[in-house]
Length: 166
Image (spheres, rainbow, N blue to C red):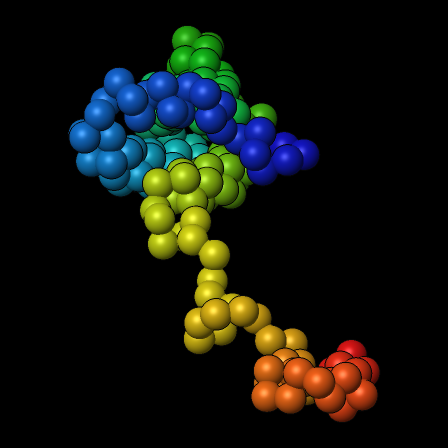
């Protein structure tokens, strides 16, 4: 993917969120758990060269990813599922899937991170810049503003302090 934001169809994601209502976060949590297990099962099946063991986790991941609008993840899982099914019929092992299964882990992680940012208010909130109030770039800015408020008629002092602040 060129852009990490292409990993999720946000219109579909928000539609699912609206349709699932209060159960959305719980079901997304199931997706997180099941998806992690599916990715791990696919990696294990590839290491063990077990074609049959590729089908169910790929099928599960495909369906769940589509439910939340994670089409690139679903498409990769579908490719793995379809290739595994063909390999079962031809009594072969889909060696060509090694790169796809390896890439699935980072695709899964990137997708979950995007879901977290979209659903966790602590991840979407901007970090505080300071204690409170306006951001002050240097102590001289604060001193200049203070001097201006204390002696508003002392334009030369305020101007000098503002120059120092820059």
